[in-house]
Length: 274
Ligand code: PEP
Image (cartoon, rainbow, N blue to C red):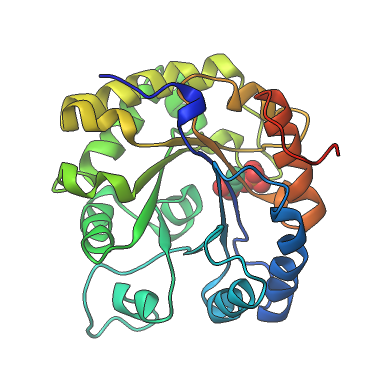
């Protein structure tokens, strides 16, 4: 499987607000981000994933700030059905109708707290991709799975089930987020580069086995306790095409600090040091 040289591949960088930020706070975040985006190289694709209630405000603020071509706005979940008796759920059409670009699926918190299964993801991922949404599919092993030595096979299983019916034609809209469950959130331990490589190399191989050459173009992002101090460990790994950041990027200053450190680690001119 051929991969483009790293300098020719986009670098993805963004944050998931989880259950934080009102519409006003989200709009303020985007407005504050806008002047800083001019200093970010074009090759960097930025994204923000606010809660459902903040999506319209995020999309309006993005347009108002002239960020529409630079920042993707994503939702944190979606249902697989077109419509129906699914109280509390949101459909793909509801997201596309307000201008959402992509959806995060399979986050560890949805799997762990809300019983999201691989089988549900096998329906959600194609439903979103078929409607033209981009999908950031999260996979990751628990501490127990890692301790038993089944981390790589766990994430490959998650990947294969979620992508079971996905065709190579949809791959240009797919991103994978590798997030070891044990590394996420305030109680998490940041992964070491060798932990990440141990899993993403087999993950990439599995993409190649399923999709052939096209599997080489799917970006794999790392997420889990990413901070300015450690982001260089991940973005300099050959298989990693971006960062998926939580707490450290919920304020614009933090977002910028992590991005600046990641670009510096890759030896990229960010304009931040002008
Ligand atoms: C996450 O929950 O997806 C995440 C990356 O969070 P944090 O960076 O806060 O560990």
